Image (cartoon, rainbow, N blue to C red; front, side, top):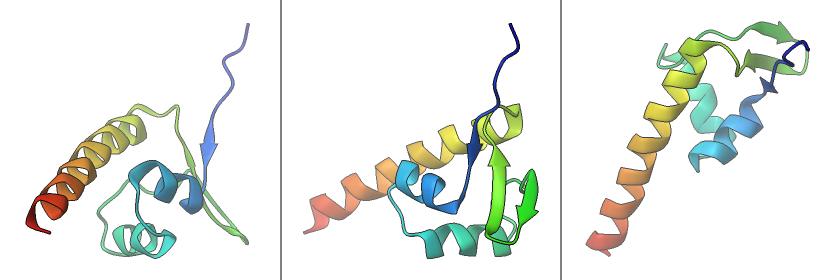
Length: 75
């Protein structure tokens, strides 16, 4: 059986990381995330089955979770 690829847009990445779509756009513009698999007229698309993307997402989620905890403690 062929493994299906899983495609993500900026909105899916933003939701997974708990940030805005604008934050994802900023990360991309700053070179702080993998390049998209393809760029469509509606925006960039990433292939979540690619190891580099999966690794980046795991690290970014961990980092963002730490930021949320720290912000709540300070309040």
